Image 1 (tube, helix red, strand yellow):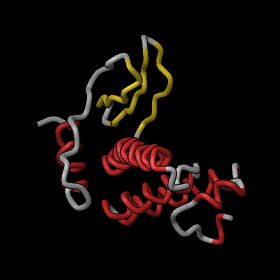
Image 2 (cartoon, rainbow, N blue to C red):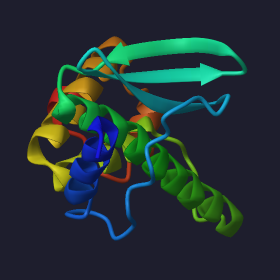
Image 3 (tube, one colour):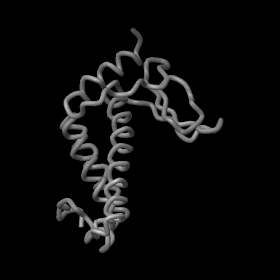
Image 4 (cartoon, rainbow, N blue to C red):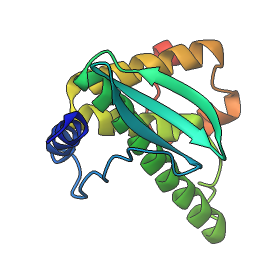
Length: 155
């Protein structure tokens, strides 16, 4: 078992706390489609995003827990944004008025899911989105379209 297998086992154990679906295998080389893959180099995990032969970013994880957080953040972010899009599309088809967009709807869900996985992951995700919303606040329309309570510190 190598370092990436160990990372996968660690992530699988964490994610089992919150989801029924097993965590997917960790890619070890580029797929060329922007999927993040992981390399183990010089005693560190490196997360790399490459598409069509061009490297977009490369991040060194500080340790295995940081690598797990970063990978789980990517996966849970995709899951909750897909879930939120499906809700909005269904609402649009049914003309329920719930089709309005708010970044908070998926931010909230990601914070909750990451918190269920590991409390410190939820706190880290919450702090990240608080920083994002400080730089780019929710619009009045996004506040009105939010389906989840928005902490007063973020408005």
